[in-house]
Image (cartoon, rainbow, N blue to C red; front, side):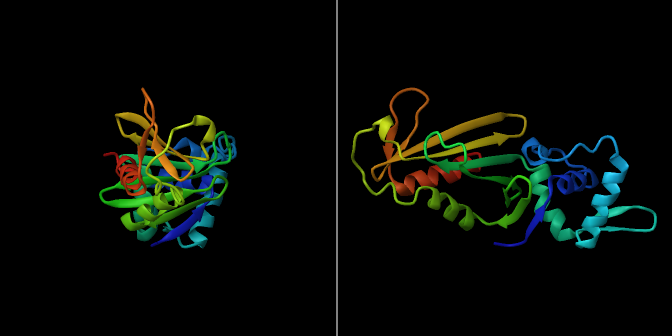
Length: 206
């Protein structure tokens, strides 16, 4: 894993304004306090905090520049063409393990958290390992009968493409097996390697 930083939703918002972000996922800033009434004060305080951490630099004219490493880490978040949300957990569990991946020109940034957002530079191998962990313990049994009442774990990915929309795929795990959910018809039995490959490709928008 490469560069990793943690930002508050408010810090992310103001970094987005400096970098002229094309898009900021609302989920990332939904926990931000109301800044409209004292906008300039909130902006000044936030930029000062970011400057103290070395994330931005402000000259005497008030021009703000973002540190190169921070900018490169956040560009997939602000300008990426593909965003994938990976979720895994027990059926009906509202507190699912979840993380987002943003893709831009071969770069991947992973995002986790709510009140404190962690941004991590990711590689394809790390993406593969994350997906493998979601399916760990399943997919080695290659025969069985699907029973929705026996589902132990659900792995879902929502992939959003700019100017296209969002799509969802899910895999259902039970008794050592993995079943790919189908929009119409019965889920299809699959194996560990195939499920990991399909999930990685779908997350990348393929």
